[in-house]
Image (cartoon, rainbow, N blue to C red; front, side):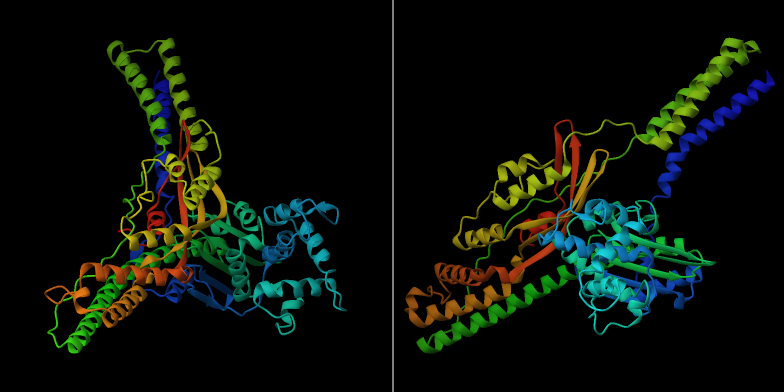
Length: 579
């Protein structure tokens, strides 16, 4: 009996520990260093902190970083040629995917004995060196010169690396050597022109989803191509790719005999994502401050110019200066964004089973305490219940939440939504929203200047998908690049043009048709001048177009997939005027 009690007690402890595993695992998911780590630090400071943490010899590592939105770029040992491992398979496949985009070949065309679609996946996702060899040997036949096939293939990829084949360092042709600057330029080119290299970015997002740059960084979607070479006792490890942070970034790392290279690489990805998020938040806050400052300065300048115009008119008419009437302004209203988080239920389910097991065990213990013994049936029942609880907890931890597979394609929902927005079919767009009955886009302003701005803003909308749609149970996210008219960028030019229009009116009309009895501009005059200014400036609206990366969030319910508007989308749809 004592032995049974010990066994039962042990099983109870296992149940409790198993129930706690999901919580412990969740605590380790966030590898972020926190904003305080980056406060006051430059990119070089962050790189040095990484070297010091792992006692890395700076001469044995090469780094690249590029922010695709701001253009911020940093390097460590940028021009040192390093062993590239399988990194070369990115520019190699750029050669072939570009041919497909030009219509010079198709996915099912054979390269050697294989279809190219098979070679793309095999060389990028599975890093098959034989597939890659088939590709570079084929590419090496495209140039008609006396150099070797390998040399000719390297000549072809030079432009992707920002190099001229005739002037690049001869070491580039010696073997599989690439610099951090060259590889950064290569990924920059790929990210900037995804349609030029179809399917390549999406394929890179499928490669090694839990290793290298992706080992610790779970918050953002990453596409990458890693390299690994063990030469005797010397390990060469590298990775290159892009991460969809709020401002998407390019990351490159080469190592040469670095201890704990895997940890260094994983931490570098986390640090660069954190660094970007921290500085993006600072940039957006500074932009708001600068925009408010610029608005105040523009208003003061407009008041000064208007006062000068009034004084000039008064000198001509020998009258005293008056106060100006404010120029009406119109903006597009967009409702505030509300984003609802959803939470998993795996830990709760495990906890329920543990509680059930405990209740049963308590009942058994009470029975023991009352009768001073335990019947065989109760002992067997207790063991079965405990074992079942342990098994269910372990299954819950490893298998995750049991959930029905959602129907429908979330990417198609995202496309339908964005197509409806860009074509003005707002009724259909709103039917795809969750938690919103509208976005204010259907509310056309009543005044003429507002209508001109509204029409120009709607006309400016366009978008493109970036990467695959990532599905996580009942949630999904799709990265897009959205183009729109930046209305605040037009304000200075509209103010200047408004003053020009007022000056024309003052010089061509009688005083009574321009001023009221207090020598203020008549409201209809300022309105006319402002409307003409808006019309004149927005005749060249493309000059003020801008682009931003947006991550569309989607959720599934029984009726299908629905879009949850992000604040960045609302800002873009309002032409950057939503507060």
